Length: 404
Image (cartoon, rainbow, N blue to C red; front, side, top):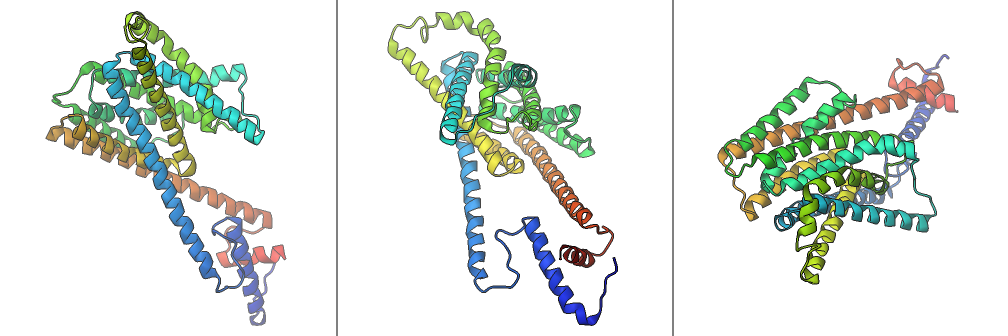
């Protein structure tokens, strides 16, 4: 198609191009509100409206982060305090899982009543194949994490559990979810070196607890990698956090119950705090503490998914880094945890590694978004039969002429 560029038609060409450009902006949904073809002085009010939206979005993000911090840090200190007196961490976790299953089931029923939409229910073959590995890995992760509270401090637990990023990277490479890059070696080296310095000659180091939480960190890497694969499969329909919690809890109970029976079956059957009680108030107090921990665990998981849903995985990762810093500060300030200079340097090195990983993920996400935008442009050009090698102004002009 030949284009005419006579001077007499320059104004009409400019008008066509302007109209087409505005339509392209609307197509890619860049603006907060529909853009008029001519400037209107009332646009200042719309600018103020956009500013208010940005402020509200910022406040909502801060509120979700604070909510996530309250429940996540709160459950860590609460479980540490409770398990020092009630030495049955695996049984406590199983109770948490049962309560979380009941709460998620109630939310699903309420959603169905108020919206009329039927929640997803998986068939048995899919339920076995897709969710059994994720549920068992999740159960062992949480169970061993709580078990380690009997032996180690909160600061050592927090530092050791942060190494799950290494295992997430490893399993992501194994399952093809992550591309091989030399920068990953740097990230792994920094986190490993930081952990070694943090535990080096630590006066509060305990080998049994360290191995328990390190095993939990390994299982956490497997758990989140498998969970990512399940959630990203749209045909399963488990993108909603409540549905995911509901379906995975029974497998978590199945995975943890044998360990609880082997290691805590006889002791809990003979303890005066549960079955061989002397006063009913003692049993009710114990059950109340377990129920409170269950609700905290459920709210923590919901707040984590809500933060991910309304913001992004990058925001969740950055919030996780600062959450670990806050946890370590509170542990040193209020629970008597001690750190030497070498331990503190190890903490800094480990946090640098985690931060570098977050930055790399942000860069990768930005590149992915640009590729998607480029694909959108290419599809638009293909629909209008325009060559991608043409100048941008010519492309906009061609598009406007084709649509006329």
